[in-house]
Image (cartoon, rainbow, N blue to C red; front, side, top):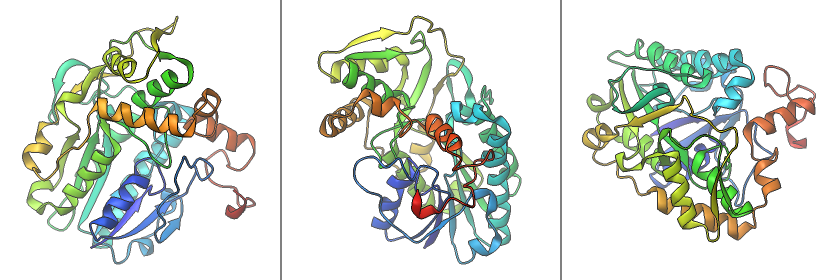
Length: 348
């Protein structure tokens, strides 16, 4: 099977690529590669690729594929808030356009990387795929809009599936430090403080990026009738935590550290506790391999191995929003987050 993976050089994509190759898939990537200067640790597995903005995809780019796995987009709330209009252009409109072109090209499967951010201010009650959307950020709203628009394209020849990933964690060649477990372990290792920026009460489901990748593969391999126009929460029920509980796990993992709350930390409106039993019931071949404690150990050992510093993880190399602002200040990107034509890719 030949698959197109957008965002193949991102945080999750660089983990999904080798897992797809191990399964024998022929994989082609599509990515504007905004974070080409942000590779962490070991290198990225190279595959045939189109270095192209997802907003610029043409039907000719989609010929000959059996499935599209769509990861590309602006990846977090602060980045989404940088320019909400761009978030809608990239995360919403471009995703719907890609789905429409995929359908026109005769591609039968379109697997969208959605998010539990769709539930937003969901409170502490368990939320299923049937629960109401309540997004509170441009990022979350963009994901909701894609699901609503793309689901209307479903027919006998086109099967979209929506994977609502819990908050991701884990080591990747394109590591992100803006994710709660990655961030708290980094603070603990580099400063001895598990630094919490809220009051610690919000609920958040978390899931390892390898398990997100396994969910994509499970959907790709599932019979059509199981995944046609379906949404799945991706994670494990056991890995729903209040932020303060994640902090305690980090404290128990990283030696000689203490929990510290930001002086101005208050309740976070993003609060959701998500039931992930549907994917395990419908797709029993999806077997998550990670839990939060195991993930904290992986992160701690990796940070220790490379000697991570506070300046590195808080600086513009790995912080998505800071990196984009740096590229804008250096005039490598224009205001629409496109590479400037006078900036040669080889020089980046």
